[in-house]
Image (cartoon, rainbow, N blue to C red; front, side, top):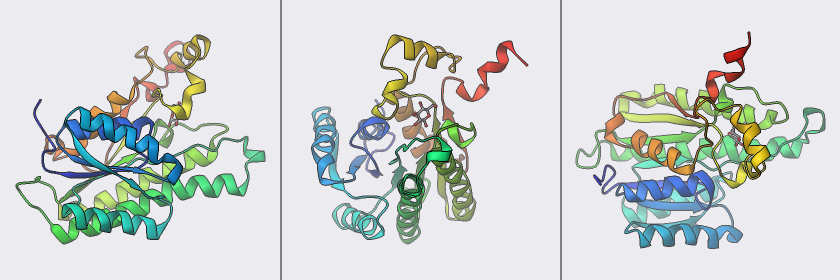
Length: 269
Ligand code: BGC
């Protein structure tokens, strides 16, 4: 397999499970050295298991504990990575969570906590990445770009989601942050894009697919007729981080089996 990310250093946040773990494996197989980020001491073992799989498959990387909602921890993660590996080429702003509630019952804590991880966390990590990309500039042997950021958004950056107002608000926010910084730093050849996953089989949404009845109901929303897997997102992330997408910036790539095609309209409206 051609190593599209050979020699590059990639930080993947929220990588101890789900999409982040899948993206870490895909990027490591594409030749990147991966920083498998996870939030707290309790997630170290899961991150170590992801790293062990990567090493067994011939990849390289380390784990790194850092709560992306904490400015000092984010600064330390970037400083440690740069002092150990020299620089950072790729940031995958993936860490995210759900705190679902009917809107009338949603607590300020549920709202603030979700926004602090899903949106503020992406801001803090993107800012450190941009600072490093500006410092280093373009090194042609590494990449045609001075750096690449891939933000993990969701179909819910455009599809409203009842019962999940905090989550949908965070993803709408990610969309405009991504586009704004893509515009701001395109002249520096820094590329910033998002992936908008649809329903992907991970722990975050397991109740939506882990019984045959639930999966059948979920498939009503997916014209392509299958629930996504983390490898679908890993492949998209490698492409967005590689020079194959060198002319792509400021866009969301939906990887959703057609969920954003509003399948309810295929027999109605
Ligand atoms: C959510 C999942 C959901 C999917 C499609 C994702 O962003 O995290 O829970 O299944 O969107 O609705």
